[in-house]
Length: 140
Image 1 (spheres, helix red, strand yellow):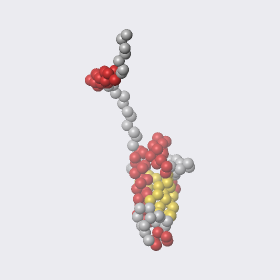
Image 2 (cartoon, rainbow, N blue to C red):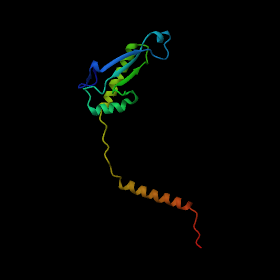
Image 3 (cartoon, rainbow, N blue to C red):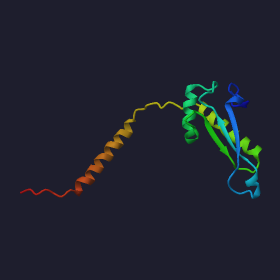
Image 4 (cartoon, rainbow, N blue to C red):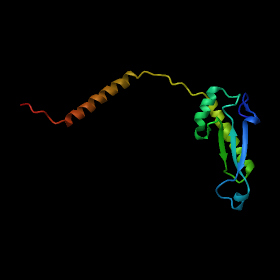
């Protein structure tokens, strides 16, 4: 059971872990011990998340979201399998918590009288600059 908030917990059947060999430094340890963790969360099938949260989670996950609707998180920072496992779980929890926050709606505002006036003055100045660049017409 993975605790997200007081109301949301992820069941064990929704998570699967696979341990693979990590790349990078570590000497002979890299070649013989599977320390990297690949955590898979079946987000699309999760009954604990609302459709809106799932949509935000899909956008946040990006390339980590699979075609089957799962999120795959890889962790291979440390040489310890247990620490990598904890890192992957923490990343998943943070991602879900971020998806739980609904985005703020943008309120349409009207430009102020002063900003409209400044814009119009700037347009007149710019127009004057451009008109001085034109070739004068002959008055024949």
